[in-house]
Length: 244
Ligand code: FPP
Image (cartoon, rainbow, N blue to C red; front, side):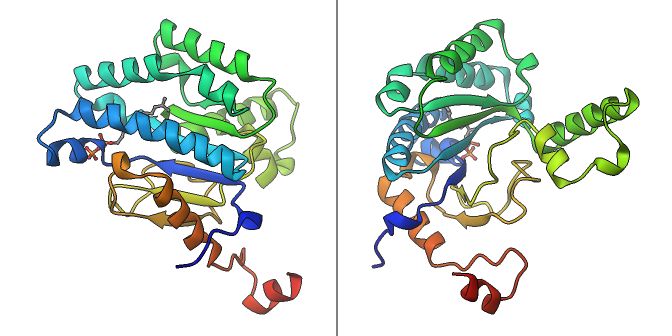
């Protein structure tokens, strides 16, 4: 088996953590049990990502579409997120915490807790963990388009100056570099409204493992797979080899 190359760790890894419900069902447990186990994996993967030297870890914790789940499941998920935001893990691992998404739909209690976590970890200099909460790419791109239109209307920006960089800057990910690797667990082969703009040249890795089964070895396997690929960004293989 190939070994992990510590000199070529992806700078930004994004994760779609799917399969909590099916993991629980397969074991005859309530869906909540899957989410509880899923949170344990988030903590483990966060610590390992920081240890590996990943600079940004973005996790899809709750999508805009997840608001349509039964109210009880939404409440359970929100409570689990609220009670499991442990600053000690971030502090111990020098992790800076950030959130992207539509905060206006979250309860005051969650917003306050998230803000505390952001403030208390702002000076950390290691990995940045970005939690996508009440997030969807189409929501984000629509918002960016509105902001840009307002700036043009107000005379702060010229329409001809709108370019890739300008659009990226107006997204909630702001100055965060685009993901190098996107991992989706749970067997589905889609990206479900997650970081659509940002994933233009991201390498995708899909695994059938349910999120609660995704452990440190699974993360290593995904990174080793990523390290076998040649990223060409639209160029030819020869051009890329000559640049290396
Ligand atoms: C998908 O499984 C998973 C979710 C909708 C929630 C993921 C959230 C967490 C693991 C918690 C994140 C917490 C923090 C603190 C960042 P599913 O329920 O859609 O599974 P299924 O497809 O098998 O039904």
